[in-house]
Amino acid sequence: MGGKTVEKINTPIYVVEERHNPTTDYYIVPALKVSGTIQNAVVLSKPPEKINKGATVIFVRYISDAWKNFVEQNKKKIRRIIYFMDDDLFNLKAIKELPLRYAFKIFSLAYIRKNWLIKNSAKFVVSNEHLQKKYSQLNPSVLPPYPIFHYNLSDSFHNESENVLLFYYASACHEREMIWLHDIIKEILRESKNVSFEITGGPRIVKLYNCINGVKVIKPMKWKQYRSFLTERQRHIGLVPLLPSTFNKSRTYTKFFEISGCGAVGVYFTNSCYSKVVRNMIDGLFIDNKKDHWIESILSLINDRKQRATLYKNSLEKINKLKKQTEIIYNNHFKHMLLGDL
Image (cartoon, rainbow, N blue to C red):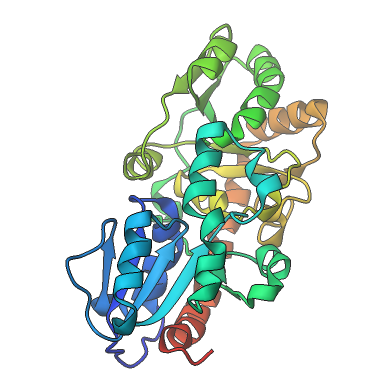
């Protein structure tokens, strides 16, 4: 990560994550590195035996009972609490749209902590302008995501194989999108014999896609394993359908980074969060939510290797621009946030 570093900050920083997760890796760790504060930080899941005086505690999405109690017991030593969220975690309507297990986790570790955070004068930080506007009463700052993958045009994408790999990798909360894609994938693989498709999913998705030749359903994996899995081989076209929902309105464009990190180009829903950074027919492809349009456009992209190469090259240029823009924010705003100047 580049960028001009700032002067050393002496305040100890405790980054609290429920477990190793993409949010910490996309936002908090890069912000600490670029702003020159990583040497003061430690990432923890469980509370330590003791905490240094003047500490800043950064909660990433979730706050367990153990951490809540630890903060209560060590208030005099804690200088500032920062709470970061990259989804709409304080919205019951949005939470109810999710699978029960995931919804309960968000409710018990995030939603019910809102008033406690306010009571303890926490600084709220969110991942995009939509959440900033929605929770304007909390006066949140915006911390954009950072491209965390290795991007190199010379060692990816341009192989000699005529076979094309499509993929859609998502968590269980996107099962609706997985089901929506079924008819599209079935038709594309019927039309193109040189195409295969990979999708992550549980037993329901395995059963749904099992009848389509050329499909591989991959068992969901933890973030560390998934991050390695993404870059272990060449891919070509990443699909990112994002069906309308309250929860999906708060999404951020991290899949753009993942798809480019695979050496692939992205296909996105029109008017989704990706339109904030991706330009249609320049850095990626936008299609409305009509299935026949997805089939037609993806088939065209499969058969136009030159266009895919151009889109990929442009996506790398866009990522480099985003890096520079994000580093400016990290170097300036994040430092002041830690110092309590804002």
